[in-house]
Length: 609
Image 1 (tube, helix red, strand yellow):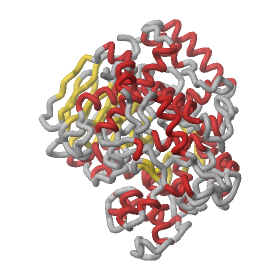
Image 2: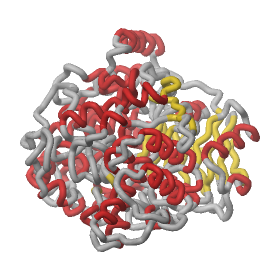
Image 3: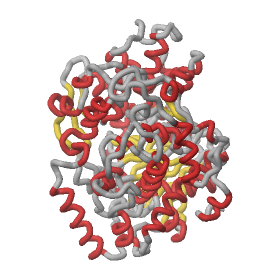
Image 4: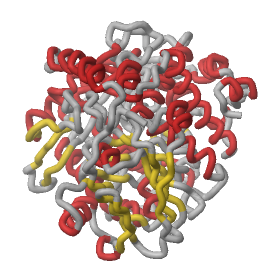
């Protein structure tokens, strides 16, 4: 097989059995890789009703056919399992160098099952695979773990691991690779911790074979030339200010979530936006393997109260820990971000859960002094302290470790948790960007912008601008971007590949460039229709898993605040999100029932019966 390595690695942590499994070529073509391969295995091997933290759950790490090929942004892998935060699936995505190393170690992915009786890590090197004792690593941060594992294996290896948060089964624990790259959402780190799996270490010395190297190289040269020609003009200014530059746009459009989503603008935004991060703390930008954009931020803070260095923060972190908590102290936000990376926490859920706690205290629904003093809006020191407490489940951190929905529910006010399917939202207010509300509600992993992000249409005009306040017609473009995202996630590319190449295209968002890359790499000659059909197949397979887990239209929801309380001020003043109206149209586009259940005809047409 070209493009793919043709093998999956099976690791039964309960018995210690390790074996290779041939990747069925037809499965590879139908599901592409990455996210598609993940849902293929979950659908076959996981009871959707199982306890996510039980040995019966399965954890899949999978790269795509373009991962490690040199295609721009071809450095991604997916982590898929049943989520302990939501009860739905996960689609946690990360870049860096680890995904390429995994692919070059000879595997398209790893399927972990069972639970080890004691802490272990998996080591893959030159075709040799072994589980090794990790007792000496338990309790170590992700940075400490990475350094120790490279010292005892191979300094050229790459490491993906969990920190104390994963060991403590924090419901939104992340898996960190290359120290600061996060498969962050939905609690994949907690599932890894529940299996007593501390880390995966890979040393890849092979290469990804290409069906037509000359064709691939020629097309690659064309695409890279386009990236280089626009190096200083990449959409969203990613090379200059990273994703943190998005603060400027969301503030000016009135969709920057503020004060636990009570409003869409933040008076202190200038203190936390991307230019300020660049001016005060940027050391250099940082790129994943084969990425010409370099949106990563290597930063350093010298403020004695929040001193540290590492990578980040990204926009989602700045919104969640900044405006959402009314914190305009950028040093505190950066420090909390560092702690999340080192301790293994999802920054979005961490910040959003602190914001929820702040509102619960503000309204008198939560009276305990969570940090030894009353918790108030804007307290950057409390944010940092609570982040550390959460990772170790100490004191009030034990309640924060359950996520905002369970925290608010325990106080009798679940409506104050800004979630869908119990997962906290990224930083785009759907009262001022209607399609984002639909995307949050229908995402297979709960509140997410990475499983289909119509903010590119509504806020950034990519591929073409649309009215963000208009809800009619948004179902079609939301579905189209979800299908495209499934293809991107499965191919092993970053969403920013599409953002760079979609500008000025039609609203049907075809996978520009991806089709050419896949065909040159695999030699399968996908048609455009086949490729988009694969995206639909993946989305519908994920939906079928959710239905079997007991989910339906009732779970495709948004908090009442967003659907019934008009935006109080700013450019979106007076707006609410018209979710129910968009859902009707969306289900029709998907060929699902009015309750959000894929029809038998739809399943059959996609080969999912």
